Amino acid sequence: MRLAGALVALFSFSSLTSALDDYAQTPSWEVEGFAKENPIGLTTGGKGGPTVTVSSAAALKTAVAGDAPKIVHIAGEIVLPSRLKVGSNKSLIGVGTTAHITGSGIDVVNGTNVIIQNLRISFITDNDCITIRNSTRVWVDHNEFHSDIEHGPDAYDGQVDIIRASDWITVSWNYFHDHWKSSLVGNDDTFRDIDSGHLHITYHHNYWRNEGTRGPAGRFGHQHVYNNLYVDFRYQALHSRSDNQMLVEGNVFRGQTREALSTYGLVIPDDSPNTCVCGDEELDGFANLGAANDWGNATVNITQVGTFTKAPYKYKLTQLEEVEELVKAGAGIGKV
Ligand SMILES: *[C@@H]1O[C@H](CO)[C@@H](O)[C@H](O)[C@H]1NC(C)=O
Ligand SMILES: *[C@@H]1O[C@H](CO)[C@@H](O)[C@H](O)[C@H]1NC(C)=O
Ligand SMILES: *[C@@H]1O[C@H](CO)[C@@H](O)[C@H](O)[C@H]1NC(C)=O
Ligand SMILES: *[C@@H]1O[C@H](CO)[C@@H](O)[C@H](O)[C@H]1NC(C)=O
Ligand SMILES: *[C@@H]1O[C@H](CO)[C@@H](O)[C@H](O)[C@H]1NC(C)=O
Image 1 (tube, helix red, strand yellow):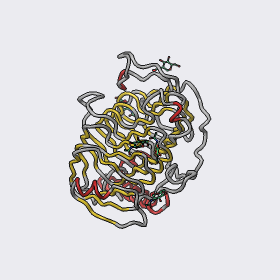
Image 2 (cartoon, protein in one colour):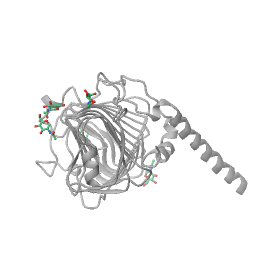
Image 3 (cartoon, helix red, strand yellow):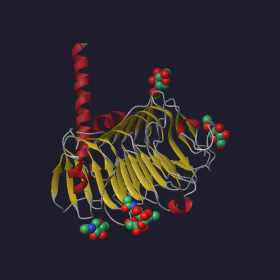
Image 4 (spheres, protein in one colour):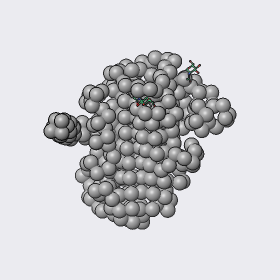
């Protein structure tokens, strides 16, 4: 019995290790999705520029200013006194497992070609952890985001919010946990003219645990959401509203997750509506289902099937049975 148990444990450990190795060795450990394949070019961040290592807020602010290519390594905890504005052509990469941003969050505004990788970002009190606004080609990869969920939806803002006609973005292998509002795409239903035709975003292999809403919630754009793991995503994980299109495939939902996916436009009371405690009325969105999802105990409410039936790029879909283990092992900091 004991030997058999040990063999089973050994077997599953080594098969997981090789699954991760497989992943790391294929191009898909690199950027995949809309930040890779799009009409304006591959997201390379600071590639080709000098590398600097910073460990203070002042040095970080200086390092990410301007549009010249630069690779900025961040070591240790940095308490930002105000929003960090990141210029174009930058890679922000945490060193080991030490890099930790707290205090104020990060803005990518009016920019292009930015990589944010291997950072822990927590308890941001002035706005979102990361806001991507009027910017293109951003890759948010292998970060950890967390605060607490006990203080309600508005104690903190979003974790990764993507707004004002931003485009060609990939959010991959992040660990989002203990936070209410995760990722809002399009932050107002009156911005149809600004946002329509933009907000093409890929979310893949992210691990969401003990979150409230918006994993993500999208308006007016296109999001390809595949191979993500949702555990105890309490109220509503995926929400497609205001004519937004979502392609949803190969995702796994576990634990106390109430609603996995909805295209019913109502901004639910649990998602901090602006005008009525009963929720804000909005137009419905659309969803398409590709490869099978495992909804667990969660409900699905698709009111309109859309036209986003196939991603316009090549990508590596993980087998549904392997998603839970692979995402838990591969998401977050200290992996790349
Ligand atoms: C930054 O990237 C943009 C877009 O690729 C490019 O047009 C610009 O020249 C780059 N800036 C510098 C200083 O290289
Ligand atoms: C972004 O561009 C707009 C329009 O040009 C400008 O008003 C705004 O100040 C810019 N924001 C930043 C942070 O550079
Ligand atoms: C968006 O950013 C571009 C620069 O990339 C700027 O020219 C434009 O004014 C910005 N638009 C808005 C609405 O901020
Ligand atoms: C569904 O809920 C039950 C009861 O809480 C729980 O035991 C089970 O693990 C849940 N199923 C999934 C797939 O998470
Ligand atoms: C599902 O959508 C319909 C609208 O088509 C709505 O009436 C219903 O309340 C929704 N269900 C849930 C659980 O929100």
